[in-house]
Image (cartoon, rainbow, N blue to C red):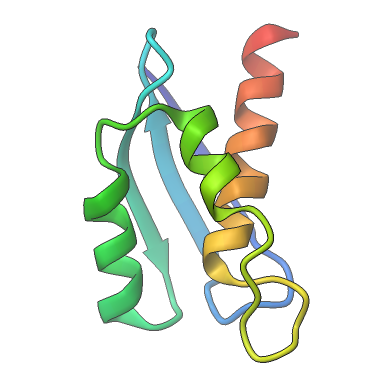
Length: 87
């Protein structure tokens, strides 16, 4: 299992940590900062799910007209992690 840490941009959350296992499933998604209830729920909902599928679902979610959201930033983080795995 590989661990990743990502610094999101233009959102309240300051860091996202997560792991991706050998089969490409997400684990231990944790947001630092932001809306605790919503972000804890995202972590629970995505646990053990296919990382690429989750990134596709979350990509483009907007928060307050920012053009992004914590969920969208998780998709950016997942995309970067999956790209590093194949590089």
